[in-house]
Length: 308
Ligand SMILES: Nc1ncnc2c1ncn2[C@@H]1O[C@H](COP(=O)(O)OP(=O)(O)OP(=O)(O)O)[C@@H](O)[C@H]1O
Image 1 (cartoon, rainbow, N blue to C red):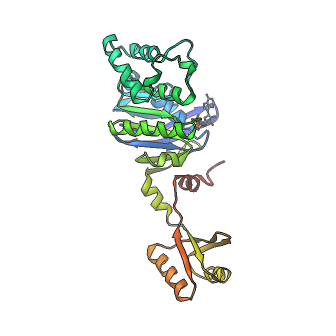
Image 2: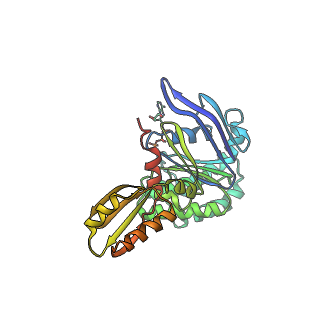
Image 3: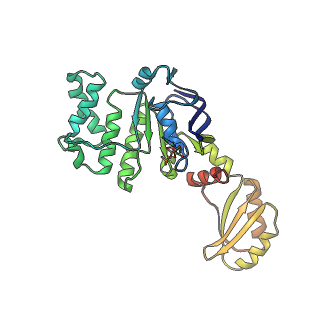
């Protein structure tokens, strides 16, 4: 659905995107993650035909974005990270306006608008002025707007930014529904755990360079090469710390009121050996577990050291 090759965008001397390669297949929900200023919005704006690249190519549904912008716009629904003020528009009028600008006949718009409002949980706000809606509601309305022409691909630039936890959950549920409708979705965020539940793949970008791309699980697996283990003993914890520091595959041992924390470079087999060693050494092990790496850890691990 998306094929990006060598995509570069410069502003004067500054390189915002540096030879980016990215492929996203149809039906995928792709999480585009990276710190502020990484180049996410730049990439999305180019895909949305709103910004011209300096070099490289980007194709959506087989159409090159600079050569066939009209065809691309028909395929995509774009939700920008900032959206404007809406003077004296009611929610229905707002969607009607966008529907009309896509050439949808009035009779169809009359059927479509209630469906869209229902999809984004705004059925009870049918005749409300847009300006009177909360931020979360405006964001959902903006999402409905991006759906008026039933696009195959949704490009959502930080759809959950500035939302409270409840509004975020609501947005997430709507996105799940869109996924189940078979839409391809590219969604950016720097709040990573939020993406973990709903994305199939992630791409991590920093300083305009794509640092990693793959299935969430695969990237987490790769990181598990250096796992963190937490232990609690019934007694003799300080003694166990000294014992652990002498063992191979252990790079760091910390001890605090929550127990012992180890950076461990071994695999499952060696982890089991470690537990056996402790138990056969007479240590009364109460708990022995591996810390879960979430997307936040993945992000910190991948982006560290590259930041300038
Ligand atoms: N019009 C512009 N002129 C000059 N520099 C720009 C312009 N637009 C973006 N940039 C720079 O390009 C870089 C990438 O910006 P971009 O908005 O794509 O990042 P982002 O990953 O979306 O960040 P955020 O999470 O803060 O939205 C930033 O350093 C930004 O300052």
